[in-house]
Image (cartoon, rainbow, N blue to C red):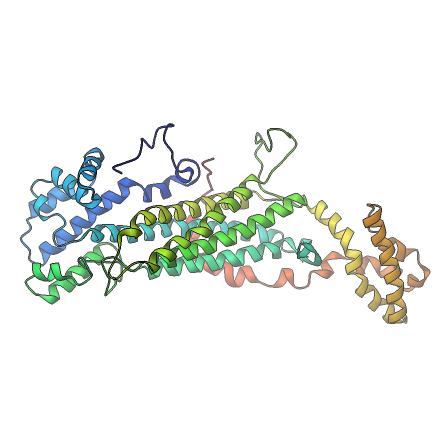
Length: 482
């Protein structure tokens, strides 16, 4: 804050996550105003609890602090930080300047991490609270899509080579299953968050024990009261100067896992767009290419993949930071955490907003899907044809040889001549297969190759119950910044 340029100016760098991609609500949670307002709120909660427990803090001092929670002189704070080279003390002085009567009791007994770490935990909690309904909405939109297309056969791929048929809805359920795991993990991490609380410089609470003249019970009460005021059910019983940086690993790990899920989903959509089987929304005046006006590039899915890769890499920061925190604390965590925590949440926010937009407008082309099935299904149906011939009195080995020869001839047409797969036409004109000619349409019905894909009840048994707590926010539409 003491250095850097005018971040609202076109002459100064601004993170594209904030200026271009992430939602206003997520940007606000990581804003200076929210951060430093929370610092002041924490100082107020500490003073209120200390007063309740008997320290000589007046109602007038408390009221003065309450009245100035929003009255933040950012210019003065920047000047103070430049002079003091300490961000917390800069804001202690700035708050004290507008609260002259309370200036002497602001930050009483506390260390910098009382405001710094506790604010970070509040921000993490609130940021997770923003992500959870967004992820639930993505799942809901994809569930609607999957339900509508539960029985639409499509060619499956393994190794990106044609495989057994599945359905468009079943494939979408694979995406949903991963996102449901992410939703459960985000909720778990959010509910597991604990407050750092009131712990002092090395976690021993020595300063507060001195303030309360050795009254151990009052120190415990102080910690409990401030924790409750901050809206946390639990606080760490022990800390060093900071809360354990393993918490940051836990949080960014589930965000990285979400990034992996989104990258897989959007890669599938990009591949299906190339096959012309499915497309993301494409706006009426949207331009796909500056040189090739016919192009409809999957730019939203590409954006998700691009940002998901960034999100997946960010977990390396807290992993390394936690590993090098010497003894009770070292300050080499600070600058790193200012960047990685905010970027992880702004990135996750962006990919969820974008994926919701994609899932609200996915376009499927059944005729293209049907044509691709017709190209590949004859080879897949050969086993069924052999079984039907055996039932009609034929020899399994003779039939196998006949189909082997015809299949190679058909494959040659496809690969050497660029023609369509004509295996069925060859079978239809071969007198050997006359006993089953009337059965061919039935044997080649795509729906008979999709197994239980449309009856597996995944949505009803796993997805809808998981989404129930988020029903009130399901109607919110996704809005993209750019």
